[in-house]
Length: 161
Image (cartoon, rainbow, N blue to C red; front, top):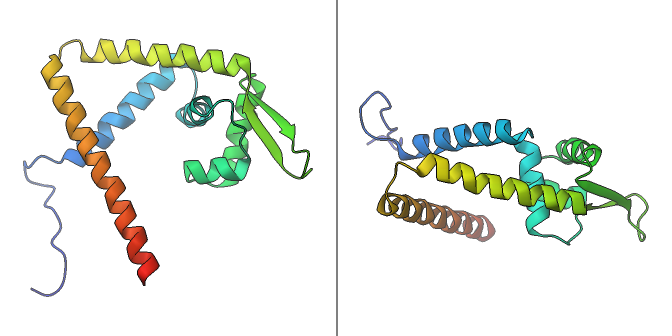
């Protein structure tokens, strides 16, 4: 062995779970985004603000939460503010900073979107059995937990070096 890591041969018929998860997730987001008329990037920001409601957020905090740059957050916030979903208020302690919060209209809109997501889930899974759905859920939960542990281990490794 020469120290190189063998790469998976993508030309085989072997199943590639991560690829299927990514493609399925991308398709799901495209479908839902087109159904509700909001880009996925705005839906993601709206979701974060809705599940943490009534918390206020700063642009930098949202950028860190979304793992994107602050300019991208500002563009999303501007679009959602124009729709009446987000209110941007100047921070009383620091006039250079804005506090962002979900409006009542934004919260109600998210509730409708959330309900619509459940309807879509029901439509897309109607041909699956309860056992198949539960198995898929367990596999995805197991993978997510593994990824969270992987991130913690890598962070720990970085701190040790």
